[in-house]
Image 1 (cartoon, one colour):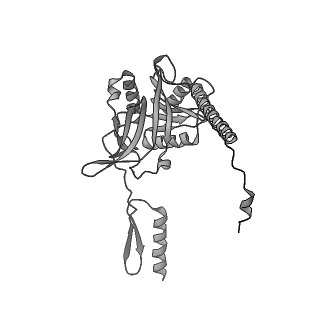
Image 2 (image 1 turned 120 degrees about the vertical axis):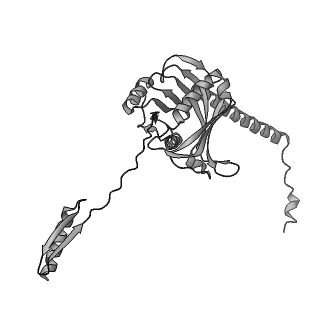
Image 3 (image 1 turned 180 degrees about the vertical axis):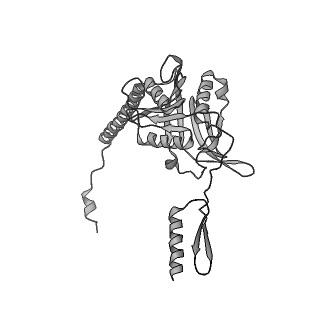
Length: 307
């Protein structure tokens, strides 16, 4: 009984000390020497590789302080598509927009930025710029549908490397070549990024039609032949102007067909007033028709034969 208590006491003391080296305890008794050993738990090492990320592209993704809930969810969807994205709280319009974004890019060590600017919660603009010297493009954001809103059947691995597809128009028109370069540097995942996955299972498509850039996100289905299934989000961009600086500078290209937010609001009010005037004209015409064609008077004999 005493020998058993000694062995238990020695085993407890060896567990308290722990370690990875083999420890030996000698217990002297009447029957000889008893040796006990304990081996520590095996530790797993992180897998290492000689390949390192050479394209250290980081993008700062943020929005203005008065953006709508739909634009806020769109920002989350864009961040989920970009493992090299860096987030920041909403930015207020206290001073110059360009100086503030350049300072934030230096703080987060980013060389590009994607910014959603809202105007009275009814019109939004998407800025894409290279920091700190530019260029930058300003595009109006319309027809926004987030991934949760669409609920498409497609799916892909988070932070996997995407393919980028551009229309032929992005090579034929000069201003679209600048836009294509900015979109490539923003949405392209750097090779061997620590957060990226070594899989290519989705594609980002940019189509140019009717003066707008249409964004679509598809899953690549491994079938014969290959097929696509939309994931979301989807939105439309209308390029309005290109600057030679980061969110500032001289305008090197401007869309002649683009309208300012004030003009768009005035057009909406004009259309609403036109619709009201049309309804009033229909009501007035109906009154005149009723006055010229009165309803027949009720016949008193109809009450005699009523059951």
